[in-house]
Length: 443
Ligand code: PLP
Image (cartoon, rainbow, N blue to C red; front, side, top):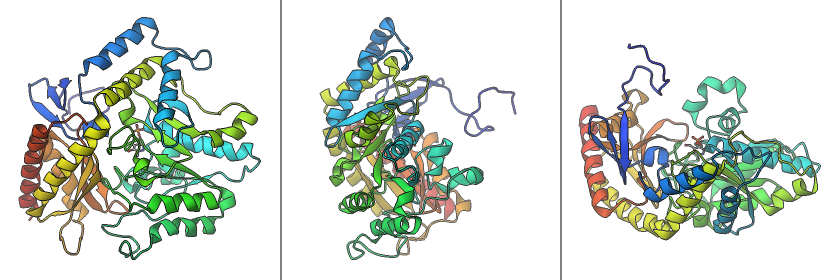
């Protein structure tokens, strides 16, 4: 192996060098084009090479790129906090800016714990979550994540595996069927709360639509209302992890809008700056901030780059672009066009067990048998085969762990919200070719 210095995800693998991006395409230094049907890691929501964003970046850089949040505030950070609050469910949110989704969920977790401390209830310090979840890679965020593969090496350092049942109707872990189940998976949270004791629990965190740990798993419409009701009844704050679903991705500004619930806290990342600069946030409702405002008046968290004016200016420009190009509506319309195309494609491909998602956060789940929904043996590495073959064909899709404990195969399709119908047609053609070829290989 040639001596290298950059640590890449797989150390003995060759990664093409990217040269530039435009719209939904990326181009490497050999001139090969890639249709970015995953927006990278479901991030590049407005596509690549958007001049308005570059202009906003330059304009801010010409003023000041960095100030330390303990010394100054900045106009872009103030404006961004207000804009996010105005567009969030029910409004009335404060924003704590960080640099990645993991920091956002971890900050939300810490604020929830501090909230109870300042209310004189320091024993409420656990954050519950579900199996089949991903909230980030740093230790606190990983502790809350049920993503088996990503936890495995660090189990001794983490909190116990998240336990609440996920709302995964395709292969229900409780062996029930919606609506006869009467949302047994949501009620499972209450069982867990009673077992642990609400006096020990600060918050419950969940992704509105499960991303990397399940592949665009959409809960029943009434699921989150029940969850919020259970949380409220037991004095447990509800944190919506909107890192993947937030900022127009699902055909609503926030994923939780589909379920009519106002979370107590939210975590944002990815689409917030659409990948142009690192930017993420924990959004906190007024009532969660109140005891802190009346108490210590300071949140014990923060990073050197928190509320970075450069990133805030970029994120503001991204939000303006989403408004002016009506990308919420576009995600909805293009999402339903793509979902229909994928469903039609799946009809004749036996290994596609499920096609699901909302807006432009979609996925296919692969199974060895459609009627029993039996997953493939892990040794066949079906997800990797699909992702790698698609890559060779110039199509970028995102791997997900299908199944409650990562025992299945799923692939996320989440192109930039700016994708055209012609580009969707090309996407579906390349995806179909890929899945058919993999099906032949493994049969
Ligand atoms: N939460 C969710 C729902 C995610 O999908 C991710 C990343 O995939 C994270 C948190 C962590 O975000 P980041 O990779 O920016 O740290």
